[in-house]
Length: 355
Image (cartoon, rainbow, N blue to C red; front, top):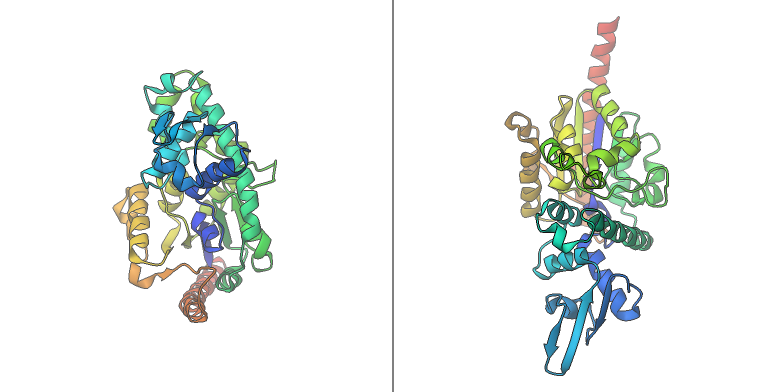
């Protein structure tokens, strides 16, 4: 039974942690409004009580109201652009916004010392994100459905590829993942030997275009280079190359373009047998992930490995009812048992062949 479990931000959200980029941006603004503690990001004089009040003003640099004049000065232009995305009700993928700005011809007029100025602002945001996630880790809730899942698949043939910075797995499921290989591909909070990777997964064409500009600052936050700081990418490659018949389980990862570099290596690998997406609540969430997988693969013959919606299941959540928990166990147990049986047959045949 060879399992590769891919964990994304939806896994932390399921555990009652407010870890989306939108949660983070709202926290930055509201904390500043309440305590003025983020004075290196924002400096304003106005009648704001919440993030909703703030974003309703469309993040102005200067505005006149009926009660007089107030101004909002956003010291970090990158923050201003990100907040504008939130204001327009778009999900803010900070890494994707960063890469778009890195490629923009008007970058020189928006950020001083381009691209060094943009990188400096990006680094400040990363530091605040680390602080925020350390706070969120305290809100985690154990979910029995995942305890059962990890217990069922725990073995030396199981690898868990964690794209999150948080230590949710180790903090609350350490007893259920004793045998499994854990790869924190994007680093871990409070681990200097595996620092967090915060950047964009440019493909070969995009990387070459940036590197041809003959300024190394353009490559500072490109994941292709960030991955070389640790052996995590190599560990994943070893697992993929040395393991046949891998069943992929996706928990809370939308398979968006920000992680396309690693996901393409996995989803198109010859040793992948099936891809099972655990979706959030409804078909629409499955559909969005399904299309993202198709986009990243760009290989129709590999797309057939994706398990269909009717044969898939919703992701367990921290507030699930007992009925929902039982439904998950009833769904996952026969699947895991079938994988184990197939693995036993394969091992037996392989042993006979060796003899």
